[in-house]
Length: 355
Image 1 (cartoon, rainbow, N blue to C red):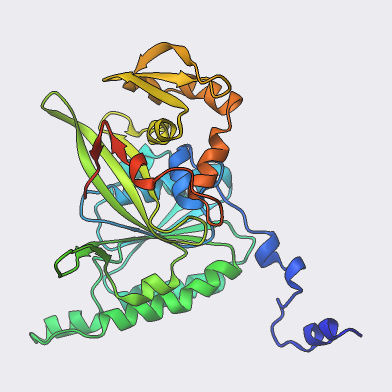
Image 2: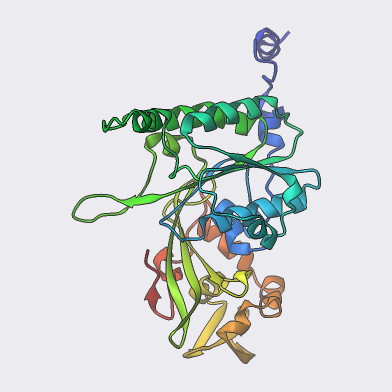
């Protein structure tokens, strides 16, 4: 008997296996959304997507965090016909119709209202213990930032005004206990969180809830935005997803994505910014764009307006006849050479997108 077989036979952990054969490495998969740049922000590739493990979507109020989570959860349900969403709700700001906007059948959503961190922890661990690896479940927590601790609630009921020091510890315990289940049972969990400005000479956005979330998360987005206008009318937002932490993307990467009031998350948004930076599209004059023949460097007619660059028809030749998908992968994925300065990509018509 080899040393490897001896160790495997003697292990008290039933799932111990030679790494090259372990299901924890060979069976991990991704579920793609319909939005290429959302897939990039999750995995570094346009054909990647939602991954098992903890993904934190953080940002100030009204930064479409729940929208992004439901976009991902809806894609998971479409890919996995028997899948369900375990939805923990502390904000109660998403009516049934909001789920339906993302194509989610609400009969496949277990809505679980929660009022404190401990209640979430006890129920979540109980559910994770019950789920099998072959079960298709995606978990959404909306939100971490709005949850009090049980002590904070008890103090309020007792009319005590003392500071609560237990919340960060309770959150750290919650994620410390839950994240091993996510990896071992192939479960994606999306946690919505708030950010706050760090005090100092150069304040930056910090994810709330203490260090436990940082340690446990596979991916952390910090979402910034600016308004888009037609004349004086606000028609939507340009977002930039700042990659604070990722097991797949280069940290501090910036991914542009747009949302309109009429159409929601724009399917092909963000691609134009990357294509301009990489020389796949050229801007001959203000408001006009042309594809570039990468083999000759010549411009391809016709010129189109920016709204036309959001269509599948505009991008089909670029996907088919150029290496644009590989350019994106090299730009964002860990271990590959960065193609252009990331700050160039998040400039739209020469302006930075700010928080």
